[in-house]
Length: 310
Ligand code: SAM
Image: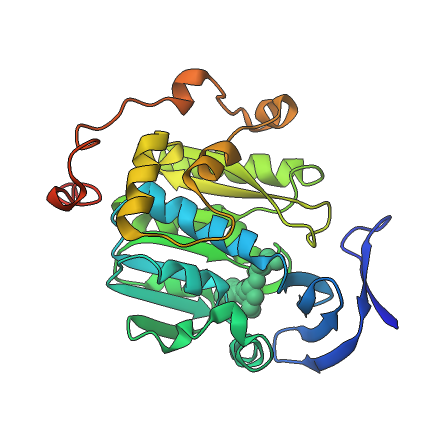
């Protein structure tokens, strides 16, 4: 059997056996490879870097989507930047939203994903609430002219066209494009190796949004296996009380494989070294926020969160 070797770092990497190749081509923006691995199922690779596999992508997609959506509590208008495989979109439309806009640079990623990895989007591209915009996410956000409740940056790593999505001007534009109570989530690479990158991004997000925090998710086929994500918005969005998360998840009957209220909470628990690097407050008070007064009332008598503050 042939092997695919991912060399994200100069002195180590991972390999995956290739049972069969479905697509190997060059688009206007990147090299695309889709192949079958006996353990992980179909694998999508862009520019030599694993983006997802059928076996473990749900962890990534659920954590990048549900953490900000549930933390917000009443997101109506959602923007996904990147995410052409449709996995994040599939999770976002499980929420009672009014609209979702997906801005993907490379139309071929959408096309190839739907052709060879249809289970990842699970038909989400047919959702009538969806608008697909083909173009650069940084440019779109600078010119958006409308506001969102949640922005999810589901991009490739900060090299090539995705570089602009990790800069301060981009975060500033995202803040402008978010409503007062808006939340942003981003994938942020590897907490073990990319310390400077994660720390710098967090401090920029704190400057722009007031509050920002890192959270972790295990994704076996991402080099080193542990992914850092970030969320920024109001302090209340960072680690809502467990009861708040439970109540919101129950209210929409959210069906997931990895995400749950306890997993949401636990993802913000940082080992001491990461907490020091990220200057992250791990105090008990932060994990035990006061409960809002609607907790305990019958579910149908209240909305997910007050919409009057928008
Ligand atoms: N889960 C993934 C990972 O491993 O990080 C991300 C997958 S998703 C396929 C990333 C998408 O972001 C790609 O389809 C890529 O074309 C898109 N992308 C990269 N830069 C972009 C930009 N500036 N604007 C919009 N989309 C962009």
